[in-house]
Image (cartoon, rainbow, N blue to C red):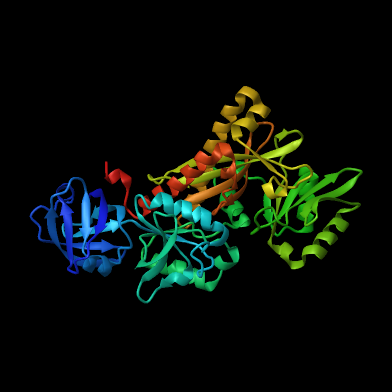
Length: 458
């Protein structure tokens, strides 16, 4: 099996003919052949082969071919020899999201900018489109996808089911619905790789890693749906803990609970009015307040050992590690943002008053000349944990966002793993190149999963 990059053009002839340049005829081993089967996604069509005199790798598709297998547009794509009789165009990459299907300006709401970036970068090497669950016609096995034109505008094109799906559905609630579960299973039954299956659940990740010999040492003590006795025991042993929803995000609903002998118990949290610090004379009164405020939802809370993190200006630091699978199916660290907590904030989230630094800026201020060594150790730890999650998770994962902490003894701790990490760290002027690299890694992994692997070109 071989792979070649070429430029695809359209002609108006109605016949089922492909016109192939001399160099491309040679690359595809078509010399002497009168016909070939062309494939896009799951669609196939027989075509007559006509050689043409033109420099470079060029493929001209008559309208009968283009319409028969629903080739969406002209441009540069790969051709893959499946066997002597069949050649596949692609890859056909689908980015699954949600939004307002009535708009061609902002069809995916606040995610439109990121999706445009993906499509802009990917259209140089693939047929890449975005779609919502409502755009799939399962009966005819087609998708009415959103493609990006050269003028940066969306157009709709109906194409076969994609070769690979990158899941960026934004809602936990939507992902747990029966319709989305059915959608994922349908793609898997059709052997279409579907990566980033769903959001991670905090408690599931802690359970998954606490028994992994390579990763367990980096995970703080954590308990799902803890009893009041468990929380009090952890406060006695660790002085402070984090009490947070297992399926939460953006720091919502998180409490930092602490115990100071002879002074009492404290709860620090974020309200609609800002950061709050509340004192309680007894542990029982603290728990009564939390139970009154949250009721049964506390059953989905996790309590986690508090770690004394390194600080700048008396404000704790943690780190967002943005991990990707690359074109060789290996985990790599693509971007790192150091997040400094705002004064009195329970988290380092930027929306809660946190600020963003580069890891080099942060670690050099704390550790001086040893900052680079500490950073390299954290990178190795991130890869170790990503590999551990992948070993124990039953679905395809191509991207992970880790929230890490580092204590004053230089030990690395993993607080959270996110299957669909936010991209706010890439807004930092010093991290824009990493943001572009993140998009490139997503596309490289799509090529890998769709078997349009770059290494086959070399």
